[in-house]
Image 1 (cartoon, rainbow, N blue to C red):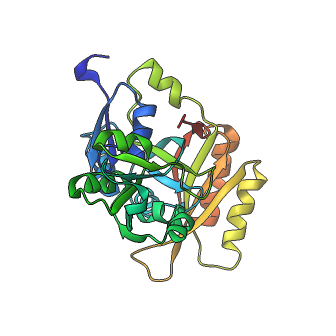
Image 2 (tube, rainbow, N blue to C red):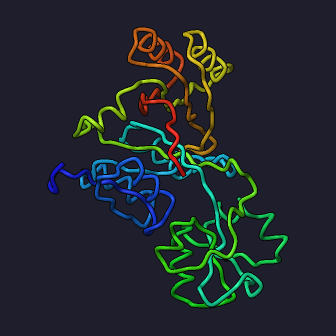
Image 3 (cartoon, rainbow, N blue to C red):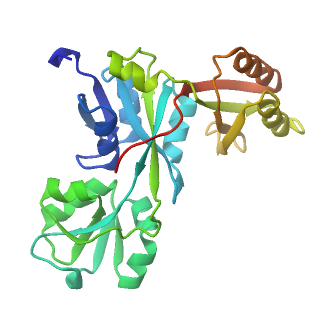
Amino acid sequence: MGEKEKLQIAYSGVQGAFAQIAAEKIFPDADLKSFASFRQAYEAVEKKSCDYAVLPIENSFAGEVAQVTDLLYAGTLKIVGIFELPVVHNLLGIPETDITQIKEVYSHPQALDQCSEYIYLHGFKKRVATNTAAAAKEVALLKDPSLAAIANRETAGIYGLRILDEAINESASNTTRFVVLSAGKEPKSPAQRKIFEKKEAFSLILIVKNEAGAVARAITTIGDFGFNMRTLRSRPQKNLLWNYYFYIEGEGNLDSVTGVNMLRALEDNCEVVKLLGNYPADVILEG
């Protein structure tokens, strides 16, 4: 793929963020572009300055990334894949320090939450950062021997930090799921097409009718057509007080005759049925 043909991939965070690592593993030959927020990365694809966005949607320990779910609800992009990245948090400090000098740790709120027991046992104070890589960058700039970042191993090398302790997150199975979002473009190369060609899982947004049993009927409809629903989450509609939409993930191909019929049946029972994407089942990226 020539320089001009390289895919442009948007992610949120500075170099070394978990999203950047995931994007690099999914698109090893692409140009990665960093954005300050999930919204900016999302809008870069909507505005067609980037081909895809790679954004976190859920962590196995801390739960959903609500901001990204809300972007899926309100925006126009489609999910073309979901990838799982094992998350290992490490304690990083400047080269001149050691763990006995650390008094405060700096990281994203979810990373702090995922390492809460470790932080409590060591008596560290917590400081919040926009993401883990930004925390590591700040620690490197401040050069404070009492301040450490919680971030991944790759970040230590990028910002010249020392790994003071490894694998400090409470759950050994800590994993973040990343959605790959597209404005509807076909993948540019056979390799990319191969990644996204399978239709094994799907995501939907539903707004059910305001009547008794509406949610139950929608869930039953999915099962009646033989599709296994594995995720159901509600989120508030920001413009309507005490009204909610539902984010659903299921297993199966909605391009099939059965899938098309299921969507039609849902439309009879719901005010809004938005198909976010039909894509390969979660692909595990090597950590």
